[in-house]
Length: 105
Image (cartoon, rainbow, N blue to C red):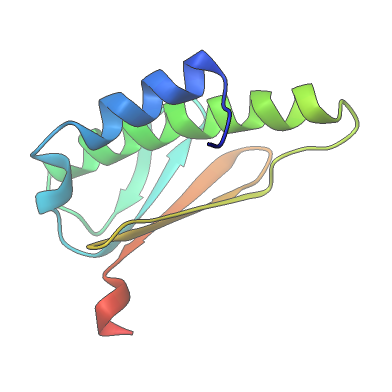
């Protein structure tokens, strides 16, 4: 079994246990590291859901990468489920969040 920190596990559990999260459409969200949305192609309900959860998950992932190697940093995160794929590209100022249906590729 894959080992992960408690914080990452709790974030994943909270993310995947919300039934409304995975009723979203494919789209793009650009957000700050604090979760403020700059641009989005999603609706006004889905945008804050996605930005809040993904910003938290990216922060946890960043922490795990630093714990593994203090000289390394997280630049890209990809999560794929049966229904959706979430890709997160991180820069110093922004997060680019892309949501797609892997079956439509």
